[in-house]
Length: 140
Image (cartoon, rainbow, N blue to C red; front, side, top):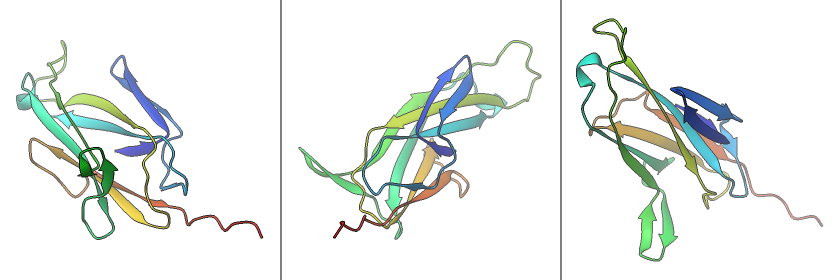
């Protein structure tokens, strides 16, 4: 999992722009998450549900104001992979995906963590953290 400015998947590969950062802002800016999941051989040809959710430094959900009230920042979807011809039986199967986000209104000088869940399971290394820079001091 990597934070970047932009990402896309083409021909089974991740194409990443401005990847590997851990600080953003203080003004809202577009960002993306580039992910490569190793799908177990026996999990191929099945539908899998994934969720990415943003937590604050206290482990609570980050909420934004929407027309429906305050909502957590979450992204979710489904994926399925087939077994590529010629891949040795039992080998993990690459599943790259990219999640591009618009500017998020995050307060300055804070720490956040994106966490991934697949089929309701999460692991400690399925996360990536970042900080927002302190607010700019107005020119005197």
